[in-house]
Image 1 (cartoon, rainbow, N blue to C red):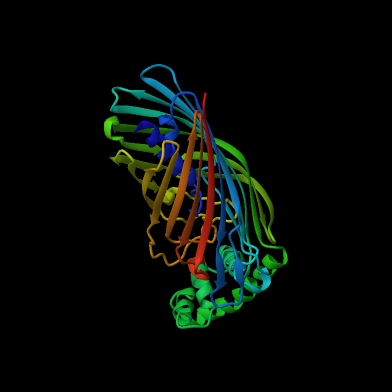
Image 2: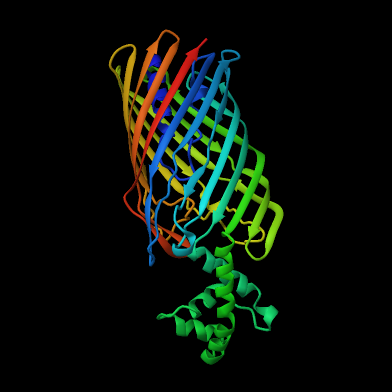
Length: 432
């Protein structure tokens, strides 16, 4: 059954990254470690997201997601009966979003994120027996990005922060930006905010709001007039580790593999452009997320294989906070992605596979505009054709992307509904 197992795994791998998954793209798959000796693999995936959005409380409409193409390669070989290795190159994380509306009459028009990454892993595997093995190695990772914030919502939020921070410069006590914003906004919370702004006295709060309100309006107008906030992050390479273990029963094609990928720290040179304040060259420190992959397979009979997987990604510790802006640009919750698939061998040369991927809707009040989704369900179909030492795998994936409200300063500003993505993947293997 080994040849069939390898065909099924390769088919599933070729489809794995052809899904809409926010910033998490390649799933950091290490299945090349189990390839036959002297196997070279190239894979390409193309994803076309459809992420329509409408402003909340405004008339802005957007088509946010941009198509993207990712590449992956691997080479696997064996040193002796117990030791094998793999070199894996992938693009683990990325974002291509652009809110294509006029910033002056939409909540987040002109906001964009172009984030790119590349990783090169050098992994070794040691087999204690034909059932037990451990593996691990180093992963070098490169990240660069350009992020722009624009539109009425960002103009107001950043203006409020700036004016609140400078309140003492005009002879006022320290001011909270959220409280100031509520005090300047007519509604049920305004009186309470004015009272808090005035230290318990609503009249004093009204006087402070009257003094700071024009400053906020002026700063917001200046923000829009100068085309918003820009952050450019230079290339930076970081180093992380991959560790794991596998248990196998070859007779029934059973394998359970658990893989841990550490976070990778980055110290990117940065250039911030803040309207009205200038250009600042500094450094942004962050870490790409740690993750755990659990992959399981077992033969149901000579022609059928069951495959399942879980990936946990620790986004809670992923924070990008530029010095001058002073707020986190990447507030993303942890994700748990489940995959279940069945492969069927129709002939010695041809294997087909169907799978479903599920990521729970967490019911978040708001999500980051740079990763505007909450949960997903994806269906994939794939096939693999084998001839001598050459294998060709391909698949197509359709993903229903969970509805979400993108937020600025904790407030929902843009609604995503009826989002989806179509992905295709192609993989070529050659065994020398």
